[in-house]
Image (cartoon, rainbow, N blue to C red; front, side, top):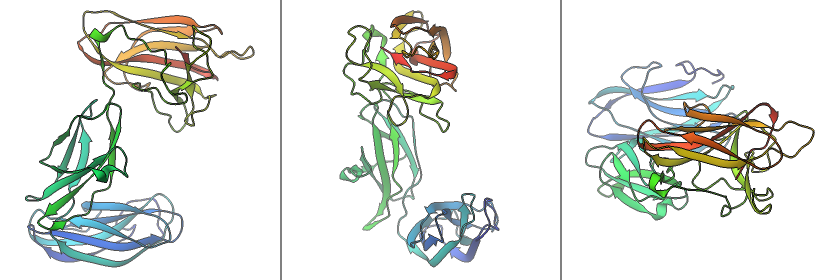
Length: 363
């Protein structure tokens, strides 16, 4: 295969015809490698026709010059004649795909397919999947990809609700099918992060001086927009070297780059928490801030108080009021919030400077 870029039948593919039984499952495997550093997708397909619309049963990314065995699974909706085949798809570079020892065999059970996670909340999430009738489905579940196999349990049906989870925690999981004494392979490990537990209106007033936060880490219970490819967005982390506004000694909050160091990245920084707020009530959001102490550059920035059912600069959050942060001394800034309907909202601040470097301070 020396063509590049496009996903068409001409990229690279070959097929055989099989009479397949809808009551059975099939396993296809192949050994593959790349001729160099460029990677490609090895795609297993099954359909009644050969064209670019053939149904993908599974795919795997192949890279490196050492052969590895790759496996896919096939089941068909009705008994009949099908083309089973392999196709490659590259990543825009010219690649040479080596494929050997292709094997197709009947198998008693195949891993669950269509695995997805939805309805992620602070202490729960819903996993959806498809499995053949009569298969027992098991899940490995944990807080790391390494320890998830320490906890393996049976999943009753799809959708399945994972409950009693910790808030703002990343979880990893994989699934497999069991029929009698036969066990399928595990699905590829997937992950999700639970949300932070909302702070209820009855818990107000609520304040955070960041004194209990570990230096150099993202704030517990808070959300920020992740750094993107052009580094416009800044993750907020606690910086020990910056004084707070009252004692002149301990911790404050400063924006940081993806590496966790002090940032000279310009443009945008943000910070939010979740709250359960009631319509008909008014809320005051205040914070202390200042600009970077440098006499030769204007490090001032706009500070906007916002709320919404989702968060981010590219999200339609309601802007309450904007003020310009100027000066090297700490000052208190306030925003005023009232929500149209009782519910859970992200409440926070967005800092912006249209051209000059700046540091985002908060306390």
